[in-house]
Amino acid sequence: MPPLDGPDLGEPAKKEEALLTAVSTTPRAVTPAPEAAPDDAMWQHATTLHAHVEERLAGVLQRQHGLGLSEYRALANLAVAKDSELRMQELADKVGLNQSSVTRLVARLEKAGFTYRDLCPDDKRGVYTVLTDLGRSRHAEAAPTYEQTLSAALDEAQQASEALGSLVAAMRAAFAPTS
Image (cartoon, rainbow, N blue to C red; front, side, top):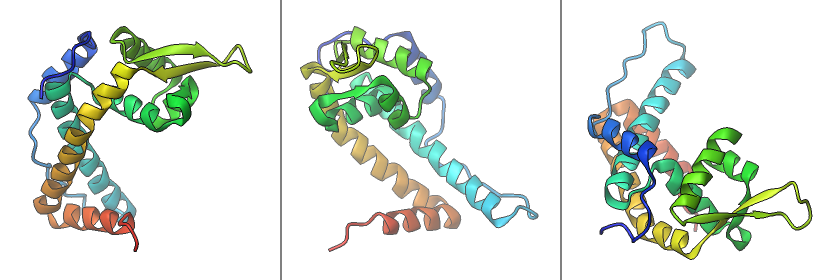
């Protein structure tokens, strides 16, 4: 589905896309050093899984929806927040960015018309990022792509190696809905 009408997110997102198109979509095999401690070996597999999933999500979101992964995550967090707004620091914490990085992220989202900033009525020093209707629409359009790509990337990793397969299976079991 083509992206909604609206401004392009700009040069950082285009650079991210160019880098991602050169990256393989198959998880790389990890062979921890024989003397690696069990936690170290596990962590190496976890970071391999994370890198594989992030590469897939970022590439697909950029190609199909014109969104970088951080932009998508910001929109997703705002979409479920009370009144569709978060303080800048809350948003930074939720998307895993520092304060200056989230400021640049929000500036790109504002330029695209997906968010706007608002002052906190109780504390005039506090600044909220608020989701617009256009931002909500772009998130709603991209969410199924995100969810399908996430599941596919995890399925690929599960098939790629026994260690990654065990890691994915354990995480899925830990977060499976209970009846």
